[in-house]
Image (cartoon, rainbow, N blue to C red; front, side, top):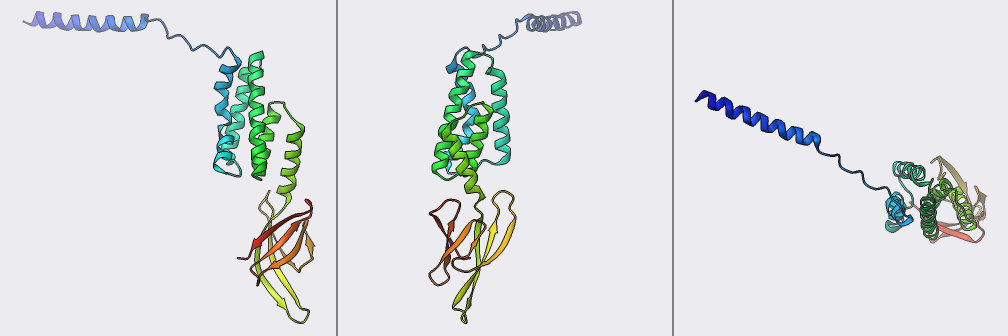
Length: 219
């Protein structure tokens, strides 16, 4: 009986060994063909700018820093991978036009950080346009306008004046400056135009864009 058992075991081992041999002798899987046309390249690289499109769709004013850096990294890789063929360059150029379209929509929404991110991506693609230049200039001007918080009011009955206590927040570095102002006063390219209602808020003009008025409610 034992010789039969040993024989069966040997056959099983031999069979499994043959399976291993067959696995080793199996030809390697063919690598997928690289894109060969502009349309194929475009289909591969379009997802790179999906964070920009998604921001416009959802109304986000900017990309998180990590998402922005990842997108720019992926865009650089796409340029390296496809920038040495004519159809690859055509696809990258088409992608640039799509980024420009996102920049226009972001500009209409006054999402200035998003506009500047689009411009950085366009510059990476070595493209440009007069429209983008104007959008970039406006975005930079608007980002120079400080965010404003109204912290309180003080009525000076002797002089029939009201002082408004404001906090000005730098949009680029988050620094806060406190200002005390009366109607007509100018500070940091802003002018205090009026006090709304019974100290309900204020109306300001941004002097770098004449005619641009905005209201800020009191806290």
